[in-house]
Length: 288
Image 1 (cartoon, one colour):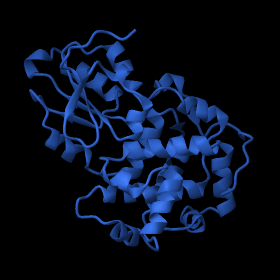
Image 2 (cartoon, rainbow, N blue to C red):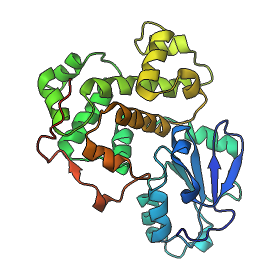
Image 3 (cartoon, rainbow, N blue to C red):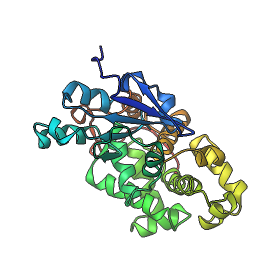
């Protein structure tokens, strides 16, 4: 049972991102909110506790969390409070505001992370895919290389591996094949660029190495299940990662064991999630 929340503590911020709508808390959000690009605005109080943190951690995947600090005089133990906030994996942490401004929130949510591949890997861990160091580095590097490379062969060469060895690495852990990670990195960047007011579909497609806007649109539909006009009306990147995860689950990209981990509501507690990359062959055969 969810604890009683203050009426002004939580708001949901959804497309078209004009109004803050009060909600009872993270328990009132549904998975569709994450895939549509909604954010949860948390106006914190001094009553933050472990039960609330757990509820926030388990919010639906794709929902960005913006935490607004309470007044300084309300905070009795700032280090302890900040540790609790960090466990919730917030998108942003803001100083105290009586009423957060929707325009400021739009700007904040639309900012691309300084390290997008690292942010994606951290998001995967929050969703239940806790990777060992070697696998984390490999996935991060594939996402980095997707900014300039177009083929798995090129990526494998940059990783000093054969294409077959790279494919086996992902297959053994029950993860989507390397080509899906590579193409996902490309459409994720496209989704972020399409959110800029000055962007056009053709311009973004050419900048990212697609032959035309139609090719980019089809690739985005195949990997994320949405078209560019959907991406351009959203803010941020977490919703796009969640769309990709759900698409891969539907297409059998993740092994059954990983699907069970990912199918939990929102984020997992670290102690509940096994580390991926230390197990043997998952028995799932895929093509690279």
